[in-house]
Image (cartoon, rainbow, N blue to C red):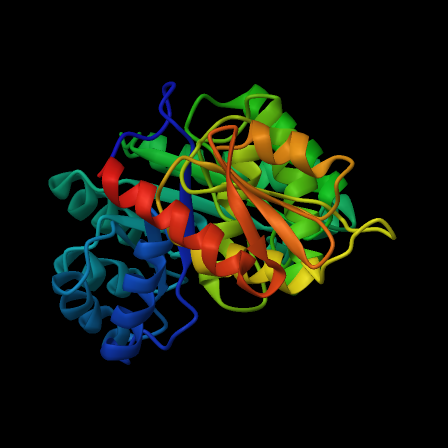
Length: 341
């Protein structure tokens, strides 16, 4: 997989399972793959988790990143297990010879290392110097880790620099992008639960991506990581950067709506969530804006009094009773996706 250098932004997530539970981790990775995840990271807190990576790798198809902290032996074990990348901060690994061992093993396998600076775990000396995790402090931390790898002749590097505050995240990445040319993994860390986290991530990552900053991305949510992937693609689609899956359009509803549109919209979106077809699907509720929006979409419905019009590529297909609108629309979209494949 090509990262950086003009390649499309890559969507990443992280397993919330205990890595030592191979079956649960494999199941979650496979669900992430169906949702469109392109890289997945697993926590490696101990040797058992590092050993489990080989079995996980054998049963999944996504590039697997090992998340390592403090113990260089875990990085070596993860590499032996066949992972495709490491996430570690060389300054936290210990003596230089330990970092050199990891670099040597990674270099032999052509495995990249992502340096991941987080505002919640910044070095004590930088907190003393700056008072708290300022953008400047985080950038200084990242550059220090980069220099360690560069001094060892290693340049297969990605860098991330995350904090839960959107404004500080933006400033940190702006400063970092001016200081280095390595691919950047972007995200707003500890963003929150699904709604709050999606909003923060959409604002922060949307601005960065619009400015041309970011080569891989993760939307960090407190919840099912599959939702992280779906929100990530919605951000990319909104910016015109990636077009995987359905572009879903629905009206906010108002007093003109004469059908119970909200459950229809929710059902259509849920049933089409994992369909990898580049269609625009519109669920509209009234006769004012509905027909126009539905006609402009590849497929759509426009509500009337107790019924709705079903549209396909700008043409009315038929009238459908309100209770059957979701089924009718989903069936048309799925049929077209099958024929296209």
